[in-house]
Length: 435
Image 1 (tube, rainbow, N blue to C red):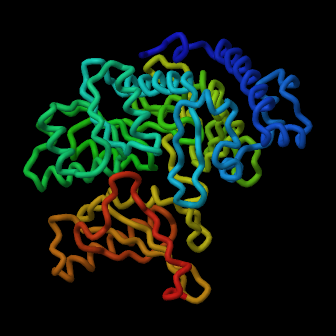
Image 2: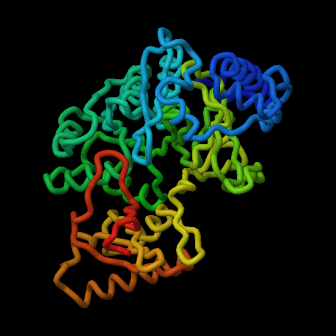
Image 3: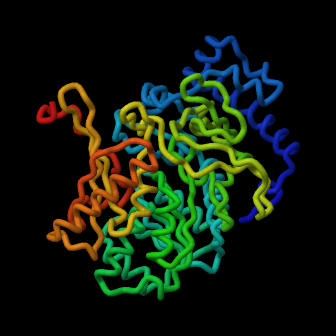
């Protein structure tokens, strides 16, 4: 499933393909989606006015609230009798968003997820354990169809029952694990408790996504499981997993630009940033039929990495997502993302890779406290050792982020583990007890 005719396409040919596909998708949404027809009219734009890729900047952005207002099927660009599957976002911050797939969409998604596994070094000879959740979440079935398209043996175990996950990894001789990076750490922790040496198993690569994670966490996961950890990227509104993926060189995620047009913008001015600068990622789908999105603001923060990867793929690479604009914390005027705190914690001996950022309010001031578990080798009843470790963690955060935060050390396993996306920020500011 390495497709060099697309993945190694010269830039000029890729641009021509993108322009042709962009014209088609703009005409499709203009004809079939009331929201886009109205927004194009308000901007004074018609699809037949598109002559270059830069003309797309004349089109308004799409935001998640647009999809919410269209709930459930108002943003679909295909008749319902052509929709063969629906998925949705988690809806943790409001009304869920629903996405629909035609049969062609499912085929293309399967191809792109197969590409993703190939980027990670997987082949038809591998055994892939899919631990992403199945159901309305796109992760499980997206990885499942991609693994099957590749021809690998696919184990659709879904999330949960971590002891059983370890048993299957061992007994089935699994070679590729697909899950969130935080759940991979829980699998490693559970394996230690069960007396299973993960480093002795055939498992060799992890395909991890669905949440921001740091380079330091990659090191933790690779050390705990004895594998190569590969980052993948996607979101349900754009397709699901399979929008971009790292290869084994681990120098950024290859964006599958034959299917997705990417922009990086300043989230405040909405203007494009200079090449290589960080900003908010914006995607336009070029081949989706069920629910195309035009200039969709993802809220994810990343940048385009200049140059070409040594693997030979010519499509541009994006840096691992470092956070989301709506996850950013402003601590005494300093912008901080949870992943930055994670990066610091992973470098401090004596603490475990499990933490939460707890937000409260005292009078009119926001308070930030980082709860972090101590490692298994630290005795929680040794007050002096704990005080020293707490000072070390506080100093490390202050040094790296140029802002001081209160640190609270907690006992091992006291922070709730997640079988899906880890909950890194707990916002208690609206609770009366904290006023």
